[in-house]
Structure formats: structure tokens, C-alpha cells
Length: 128
Image (cartoon, rainbow, N blue to C red):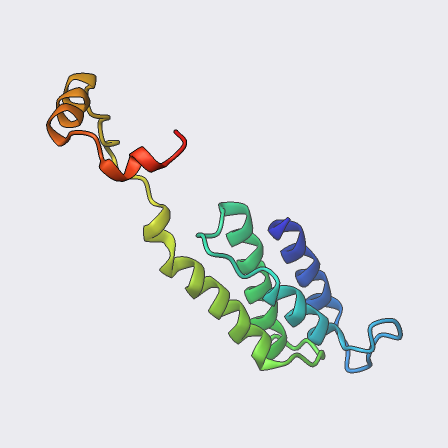
């Protein structure tokens, strides 16, 4: 899931070094960025996913900032995190539920519409 992948990204961010791993031939930061790009969504982040992304951002800022940690981290990792967060926030309006669901039309209205509109002659050629 996305939340699991974000947790794995956080582990790679926290344990990254300058030396590439033997199996992947990538550094921990490169692997984290690759995993983070796989988390791109066309929906808003769930609260659990948002919490994990906030944790990754906090780790990036601690490592790149003045916290005294002696690890190297690509600044691009924080930019990818912010891009993912921004992309998910831009799509939030598509998935928000309105306070009142639209009511279904009544059966009488549908029947009246069907009667007034008549039968579509193009439908005569279809099997249904």
C-alpha cells in the first residue's frame, strides 16, 4: 500500500549513506526517491499517508538542517515530498463530498421524460 511504501521511504531516509547498496547499486536516498515517486496518486492522501509523509519531511529537514546529524541527503528528496503533497492537495476538491447528496429523480419524473422524449430511432438498430 501507499502507507507501507512511505514507511519504507522513511527507513531509507533515516539510514541513507553515500555508498550505494550492493543489490540495487543505488544509495539509500536514490532508492527513497524512486519509492516516493511510486506513491504518486490521483486522490488526496489519507490521514495515515499524510502522517507518514510529514514524518519523511521532518527527517529530511533534520538531516539537511542544523540538527547536527552527520548524514548526507539530496535536497531533491524534500522537493519530491513537497511535490507529492502539493499534487494530492490539488486533487482534494475532486474527492470532497458535498454536505447534501443530490436526490435521485422520482419514478414519475423519469416516466414523464421517457414518454415526452419518445423512442430514439437509433436504438431500433441495437440488439437491446
